[in-house]
Length: 338
Image (cartoon, rainbow, N blue to C red; front, side, top):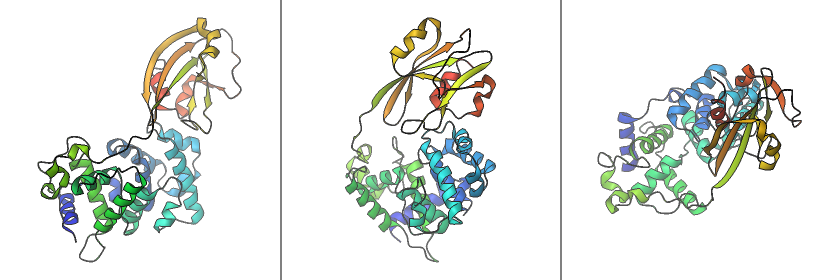
């Protein structure tokens, strides 16, 4: 086994994280954790994983849930396509008669890419597949002094090949790929962090090219490719005789399948109502991956039930919690619902 892997494994034995999905070989529990952690920190994702496992202990039970139920349980995690993909993939697994046990089979599941398939495959089935996530990119680029951008095809191939060559082969004398993969991910999350890495007590300091050359802060390299767009949303909370109105967002836009109050994106459409509106919050900033949202929030208490666009429906105000809503809407509703 190479010295790099040996050092990581020794570090992991002493400082690795004790996470509940590492105490099982159940591919469902492992897959669930990986989907949750795709865009979520472990501290926040842990609670959601436990919540899902309590409510749907098996993939069959998750597959039988409605999409609304899954989205409601997911509320607050963001990147809701993960929840929709999770639900769809649960149905795929049930149709297959069980969780796939090959990398290609795992990759065939909705929402599962190369990294997630390698993580599930190695941890659940001891498949010899190296994981390459943000933590791994950072550790490898710094230790080996690689400046190839990690978000271009050339970089992805270079790091994938390097990661695979470093993966110990599974024998009676060597730990499984599962242990090594967890070790390098934890090392990036705890030791070789994005900012203020703990270089002075790093067991790899003597062989780290980035430390030797003073390039730790410059690696890994990531090219800026997308311009952040801004978007303004104006929400109106309609209150009439203990009821309010919401609608479900459609496909092809942010927050697909989630619910929200009356929305105006064209200021001209709002003008006829302005004299009847009470402002609650103005210029609330909400940052998504590639866009910044600015939201205004108003209260409207009409004297009689108003005519609304056909995709809106009325519910009792007390029933709002039964519907999965974007985090931004939750923030806005906090100003009106105690």
